[in-house]
Image 1: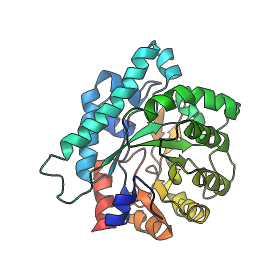
Image 2 (image 1 turned 120 degrees about the vertical axis):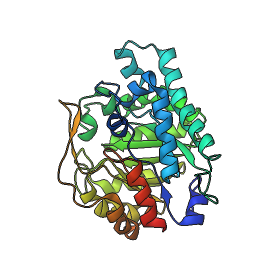
Image 3 (image 1 turned 180 degrees about the vertical axis):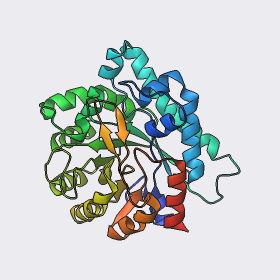
Image 4 (image 1 turned 90 degrees about the vertical axis):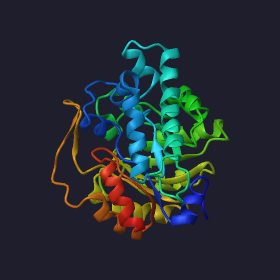
Length: 313
């Protein structure tokens, strides 16, 4: 059964192509993200650079732009000396930048005739991302579901009412954070979201919890339109996609990183031998059951263009 708002894309082309990384691609283009706010710092200091990257992803073939709100949180902005009104405006602006880029590119003669109008997904990153200590890759928060609901609630409400087409709840490292987000979806019945987790291997979340039960839990929620994995080493993706496919009748997401390792102390990715590129591996993920594919940290428009060509040529 097709799930809105991906249904038109799946009906027309069988897959949905997501964009790639924001922060690491902005850094590659010269932006300074050596900050606890990460890509949210560029959102404040150089919003045009963010808008340009969104446009480049759309022109490269992305059907969905993920906003620069992954690292944006009220607590993170507060530590940077930015008050709640300004923080809220920055998050609304992030969504407006992606919407503006989408509207502009649809009028661009380089945007292929017949393509579906792209979507904008407001990124909701994990609690650990705001801690800026790498705990989004461990899930060892030491707090429970109620505390996570309270921490996410204000940003979740803002982004659910931001004008984005859907919410991208991504890089979730533990089951309790998924449970918290599902409770927040209950509080916002008009919202639609995907739930994507970060995994340590081919069967376990970053926290070490089994992957399959969390996919089953998320997929059972009527407002969740897709489930899957992101910012995980490409080598684990095929196994995780198969598990998600068994757990869910909804579209399965796969948007891994480039295969590098995050160094929380140095706040940078450490290059590792990554083997094949996304476009070479993606047909196997598609065969395993993935229908929504893209890239995460370390990928850029060139990888998304190659991915679209590999899957839709």
